[in-house]
Amino acid sequence: MDFEFNSGPVSEKEEIKVVFSGSYEDIPENREIVIGEGIEEISENAFRDFENLESVTFPKSLKLVSPAAFCGCKNLKRVNMNFGLEEISDEAFSSCPSLTYVDIPDSVKRIGEGAFEACASLSRVRLSESVVMIGAGAFAYCFNLTDIAIPDSCILVEFNAFASCFSLETVKLSEGMALLDESVFEGCRSLFSVELPAHLTRIGRRAFKGCTSLKSVVLPSEVRYIGFDAFAGCTSLARMSLPGGLAELEDGEVFSACDSLAEISFGGSSEEWELLNRGQTLSIERSDCTVITPRVNFIKKNEI
Image 1 (cartoon, rainbow, N blue to C red):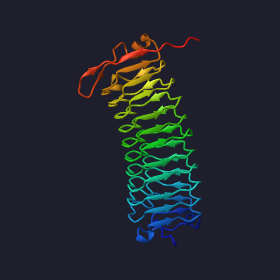
Image 2 (cartoon, rainbow, N blue to C red):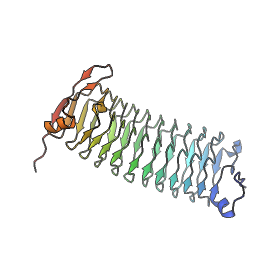
Image 3 (cartoon, helix red, strand yellow):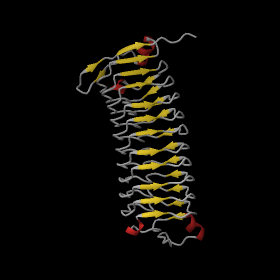
Image 4 (cartoon, rainbow, N blue to C red):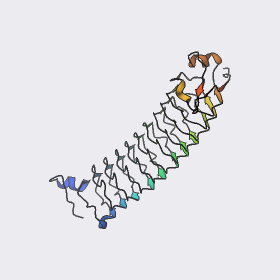
């Protein structure tokens, strides 16, 4: 296909390497697009809001999908990616409501902010085994996503990354993660199983807020901080296991509206528990405004 560029004259080298906005028209003949070898980048907004596009195949030479490149392609059903792709930028595929499955090749190291946000039909995602970071809101509002496994290569999943994924049931987090950022799984009302990494140290504010199907959580021994509202509204949460080395519960609202929380196991002493709670009894206000006080079991430390 002869490229038509909207951005003015470009050199032959640039023409070969980049698909610009205007390289393709949004016409029925372009329902299925195969981008030719030699292309290394799809530019910002290149296919934004294409209504006819249903399928796109990337070349092995492609390294970058720029911001919002396919944003709002409401009929896009299939994206065939190849090994060699390194980055999927911010909002690259956001608001593509017909996209159902994504297989991200193992060469991808970064998934940008909102990259697949509001892909309402997206039910399956295979993440790159080389991904280092997943940006804020990358998969937020993917209402049909049912499970996710974050590879051990990943060291950072930013805030809201999977927020309001209403069908998400099981999660396995990367062993490379020390931080669970704010609101990462907020509103994931079907989530019942979370596999947390052994070296997790911080659980951010609202991380699991509104996860109403979560029944029990055992926190790794290295967790030192739990933020405000981290488990608020987990109405099915009946048991919680907290490590003895826990240094801070940001405040008593960590477990607010946890209507079923009857028992907490704590890996330290009663004195350490009192210090952790600033001398106060941990009481929980339930959804109906009544107050409960969970039973606390103190687990003796192993003697050296």
